[in-house]
Image (cartoon, rainbow, N blue to C red):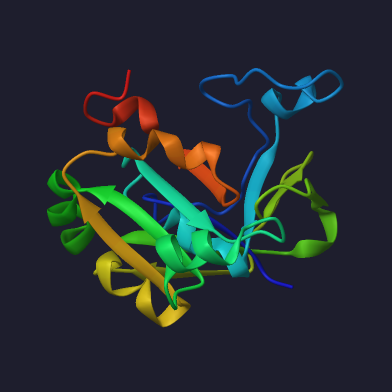
Length: 175
């Protein structure tokens, strides 16, 4: 298994645990997830972070509960779909981000969308720069869909799909 952390900073030698910038409401017993941690994503879902840091996006994929009709309607032949607003496309084409590979042994699996955390400092094992982010999705079996607004996709949370929304506070007309 491979774990990664994505950043626009090309010079991170050590990841120090830090609290999340904007705390989330967590289920009882999981409040610690807002505390000081180093976060990573597994290789199967690294596409969730192939975006400029503040770029709002919605990512979907099938779960065991997804009906075949929903799978065909939303995914077609793709394993996942990433939705992004049109005005972010130029930045996807132009920006470079850095994928840091993390040593997996100190991380805890959250059992949620490929996310892992570590409670102590982590020294990455490798860093690679990734440019032309818009071209990174198809090789991973993920369709990048450019939409005028993410707002009409709010009902995706009422489907049998897994739906992740990241940085949605930055989406146009999200509220």
